[in-house]
Image 1 (cartoon, helix red, strand yellow):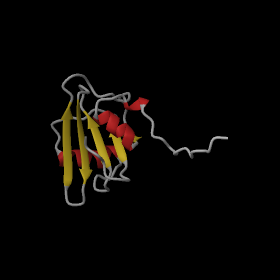
Image 2: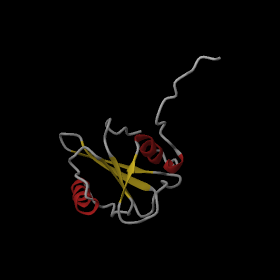
Image 3: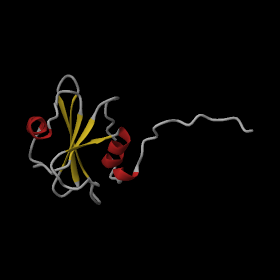
Image 4: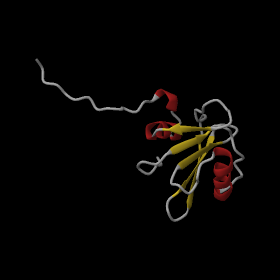
Length: 118
């Protein structure tokens, strides 16, 4: 599992991209189409047309890092194909990366305070 840096924004491009694109082409696409700065430390997630491949682009402070993954048995769960970008939580990103339906997971917003039995 690829873990995004703590506090990083995770942005999912909802429209499929040409998977022949490399890191610099995806960075240009992120800046032009998504309005995201590829050098800000944001994790940029791109999908293929067949929905079985994913590319993840991020700037680690020293260079662009490109991660490519293909699911062998099935497809990633994607939102409807529209122009735009969707923001994911780290938990949703982890589920997406593992091929789990990320729309069904929730981040625990607050840890409940235990109470003493009465």
